[in-house]
Image 1 (tube, rainbow, N blue to C red):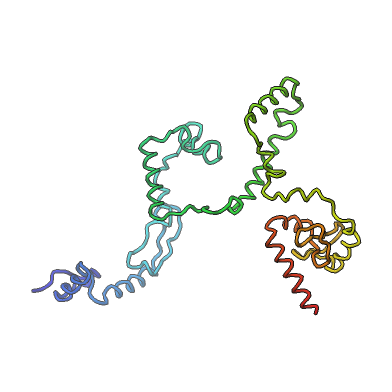
Image 2 (cartoon, helix red, strand yellow; image 1 turned 180 degrees about the vertical axis):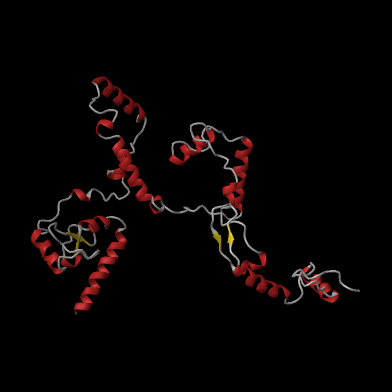
Length: 310
C-alpha cells in the first residue's frame, strides 16, 4: 500500500508508509517532510532570501532584516510593532477633559486618587479575594515580612525620612493652620479636663511605665548615686591614653569631643583600671542595651590585649 502523504518541501515525493507508521506511533502525528528535506529547504530559502530586499508594509520605508533562523517562515511583513500603527487607536481624539476613563487613569498615575476610588467591592468579589488569600496560606504561602521588624523593610528609613520632611514643610511656619494663634484660657481648661477624664480610673499612666520602678531596666535607683571622687578627669585621661585615644568598639579616634570612659561591669564604684575602657559617645550609648553581652565582649577584649602584650 502506497502512502498518499507528500513531502511539503516542494519535491512532490511521497513519504513511505513504514516511515509514516513509525513516526505516527512515536509522535502521535504524521510527518511533513522526508528525512533531510526540511534542512535542504531552509538552506535554499536562506540563499534566496539573502539576495532580496523587503520593506515594511506599513509604509515607513524601513528595511526588514533577514534572520537565517526564521528563513523557513519566509519574510516578515512588518518591522516590530509597526503593524499596530495601521490599527486605529482606541483613545484617538480623546483627552482626560472629555473622557472619564482617561481622567481616572491620569489621577491614579499622579497619586491623586486610586483607580478604584468610589467603586465598592461586591460581596461576591470580597469573598473571592478572601478565599484566594486563605487558599494561598493553606498551600504554604509565607508573608514577605514575617518575623521582620519594620526597620528591616526595604526603603523604610528612606521613605520615613522623606515623609517626615514633606510633612514638616506642609505644617511649618505660615503653612501651619495654628500659625500666629494661641490657646485661650478656656481652651486650655477644656484640654485639661479632657486629659484628666481620659486618664480617670487609671492607676498607672503609660508615661509612668517608661520611668522609675515600672521601667524594664530599673536597677533600684542607682543612677542617682554620685560617682566616687577618684573617678575624675585625671583617671579618665589615663584610660584614654592607654587606649591610644581610640574607641575600642568602632575604632574612631578622639578629636575635639572627648571619648567616654565606660565601666565594663556597669558598677560605677568599681574604678579598677581593668574595669574601664574607652568608647566614643555613640558606642557608649549602644552598650546600655544587652549588657551581659557587652560585659563578656569587653572582658575578652582586654584579656586578649594583655596576652598579646605579654
